[in-house]
Image 1 (cartoon, rainbow, N blue to C red):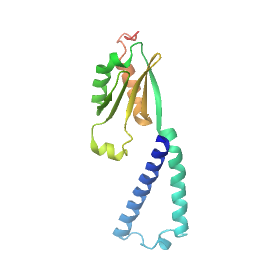
Image 2: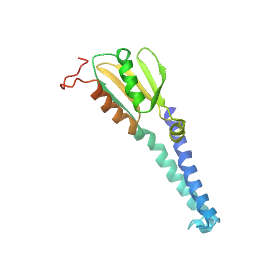
Image 3: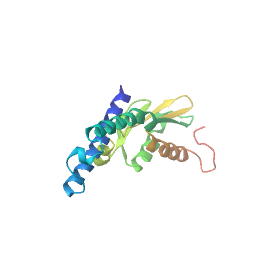
Length: 160
């Protein structure tokens, strides 16, 4: 269900951005307000553009979100303070904290709105470490940073 909601959000988001862009161009007088003049095939083109947005939006959640693992011997419950400090430095705030699952969201309301509320990073314990789940563009740097932060300067992992 979460996948479908994300797809619908991105369809609406891209549609609103295109409509706002076209509205600005019409107000500035760069294009005609008549759809038949604005697009070569008029309303048929609008339907084709909407279908293209729907197609892209249907696949974006599959590639826009991922789960990566950080290898460590300690569970999330023992690393909460270190993880929390790192996430605070990246502009996140603690949303929920349970025994083995911690979630963070962006501190900035503006960034949360721009990301349509899909800024949640979930960190959960698993065998051999913990998993970080969230938007692709955020997860990879977080995993790399946490892996570096939780490792010993000598190259040995401090958590083994």
